[in-house]
Image 1 (cartoon, one colour):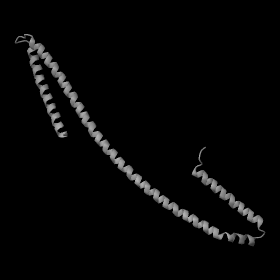
Image 2 (spheres, one colour):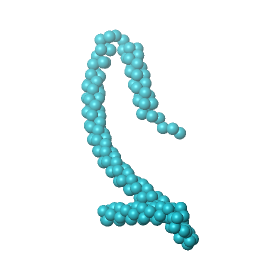
Image 3 (cartoon, one colour):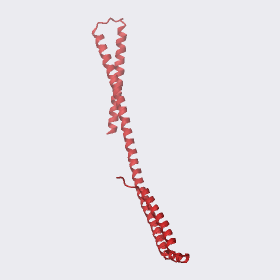
Image 4 (cartoon, one colour):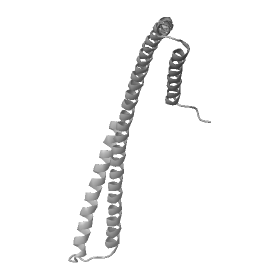
Length: 173
């Protein structure tokens, strides 16, 4: 069974008041014989009218206090929401910093792996060529010198990367 909404209840109460108001008017008109008697009967309810006016005014004041309290609660909730958003933004900034550091580390690792793989390749080629007896005028001697120069350059690159990573690690501590 569903519960009636506040709007439905308000409409039902309003309809009941309207029916009572019309029925009262009809009964007074039909039961009381003349207008002066009806007027005197109506004057009896003047105090009831003042009572209901006072009750309505009291209800209005109560509603103002309820709205004031609700606004206070909304302000508090809004401030809590702002604080949570600040914490969330700070956490996102920290996450972004960590992700950037992770991306730099992954990039550095990929560069080091590539340089290391190239260094191993050139060392393997050099070992193979150095095992063979190569005469002085052979063009393979130029290839050997080229591989040796590349090996030195890769070692320098790896040393620079190592120093950069070491320096970065000391800064983070």
